[in-house]
Length: 101
Image (cartoon, rainbow, N blue to C red):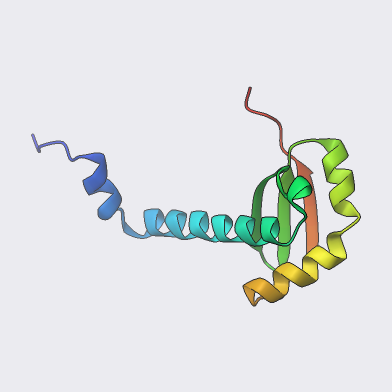
């Protein structure tokens, strides 16, 4: 029976699926940083996730009232994030993300 490998070894030799997952995670982290950087601090604090796929920026926020406030600045946000990331963002989708508690 082969010796079990450590998690670290598995992560280093994960192959294409793990590399794709790692790249997606890094892209989402980058998108979140750009979104939060383009918003006023009080509004940025309510953003819990962000990601760009197929020209659409999807933003997850903590509650419906904050989602409504974010919708008022979507066009400005779209232009700022598009410029700072150097990609074309055609639309923004805002979702309320349920809490984990």
